[in-house]
Length: 157
Image (cartoon, rainbow, N blue to C red; front, side):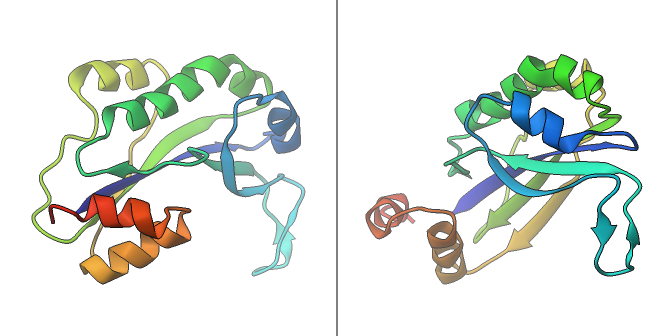
């Protein structure tokens, strides 16, 4: 089993996160955000930069069915890039998490998709996690996949 989870992270010293949230019309999953003036509870000081972490609203990339999943993220960046700039985004990264139970041989983005991302100066950090099939099933459930969908995914594992 192989799962890819992409997260678009946007950062900026003057980044108006709430203004951008109001502009975004596409369905998204916002997993974290803060304004530059918000207080970091760990150090009890202002963050001094805005940040938002955005994921696809319903999907993960699973078992080499990645192209549509990748395209959603690239299209999102392309469609909202001007809004990012207007609202103070200074840095964009697409954080890649890879979860696998067996051998892990993947192409994250093909050369055409990399070329599109490069136009926006996007960084691409990556983290890989080896998991058992049972751990992967729990991860899928926590991301909204039904037991029936999971059963179908593992049918040929």
